[in-house]
Image (cartoon, rainbow, N blue to C red):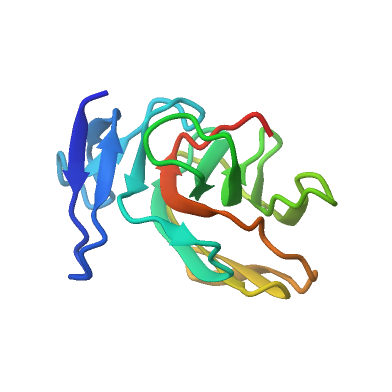
Length: 170
């Protein structure tokens, strides 16, 4: 893979590493200012360089042009290739559900929140707020569309946040 650094614009120095993908037009029509992955189930992705120890409170947010099913954004046990473990991820199901999933060995790949969306090939803002083990919220284009208060812990491991290919054997 050609490797490129993706700079953190917040100033916090949490730069990403880009593996594969192609420059694309962003939601404002600017050329070469965002990345397109040919398949979210491929090994084309952006990963954090910094690892995190078992995050239990976090927000996942991105703008994405929705045109197919697959994993969007999640937490994996490595930042260079196919992970053996992944957890805390957003995905689109083939049936049109936006899902936030938590891996839990007792519940076997528990689906935490489901909500219907449309593959309309337009840009959308998606945010998932996970507040420890008992509250999860999904926002779609600024609107709160799903809330869950299911009590579940995310899998305990050190890992990296990834956008794009986070496929695992699970």
